[in-house]
Amino acid sequence: MNHSYFITKKDNHSYIKIQKKELDDINVINSLKSDLLVIINKGEKNIILDLNKSTKLNSDFISSIAIANRLCKSVNGKLIITGLTEETEKLLTIAQLDDSIIMAITPEKAERILQ
Image (cartoon, rainbow, N blue to C red; front, top):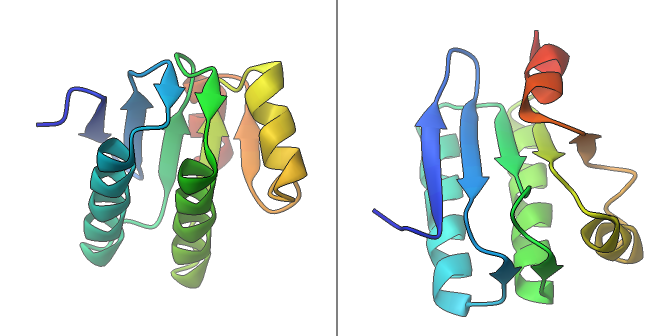
């Protein structure tokens, strides 16, 4: 198990809670990317990614978000990101992902979007 994040399977989605403040470790990012691929290849369509504890994202992590978003959309699913700080939301805007990724304030609001 990776202690930088945990994954919980829910009824209609997988919930991923990031535990790191700074998402800049390439090993963690590669592990997360691999887990995202496994989740989607197992048939999951919807993923809620909770970044509540994260204040810094690097370009590799942002690329992983873009890939996960494309994969979810390719199976008619949704990637919803929650817990964004003002700084992390700005980074997604700079990367031009703010128009294609669903954002919710809390995981509970994200779950309501999926209902």
